[in-house]
Length: 66
Image (spheres, rainbow, N blue to C red):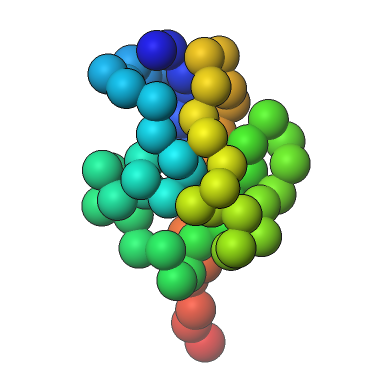
């Protein structure tokens, strides 16, 4: 299945939840905002939202500093 992840075309073998995809790419779930097709997901939606063919997804890490 093909999709766009952070502006890059990627292909995944099987249908995954957004949370499973994050774990596959070793994305820390605590400090990241996830957008699927320009809709920001709430943390409790990560496990129930499935990645579909052609989805456009962004993982945006939160960075603190002073």
